Length: 160
Image (cartoon, rainbow, N blue to C red; front, side):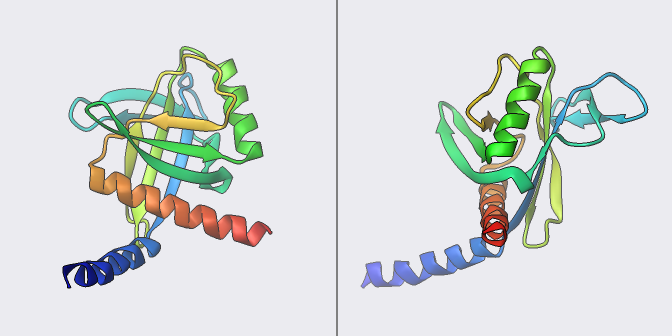
């Protein structure tokens, strides 16, 4: 009987996640200028980074997002489509030593959001997968991943 009671709860939880939407913006660190602005990343010990106004990648190029378990926590991995893979490869090759700065929004109305990470570009990323540790709770990260996957599914369905 307990197993029967657990199943509907899981279905309800899945339905709630199906309503989530997500947005992702990947910017590259750039010199101060007309087409850039300064942002703060990390809430507990903010770090100022100057980023280009226009993102290099968005959820429009997203195939999927995954929450990964890591030693001591979790990370988010996003996989980009062919165009996104090319853009990621070109930018990581050109801007080694700079930061990619990642902004995310999530929720049923994409109302919550903030700068989540600023990983240092140490090498060319040619496989179209970007993994980062977000400045977010596990619940926020789960909601972001669910929202990004829902949006990716909608975008990929419209393109077919």
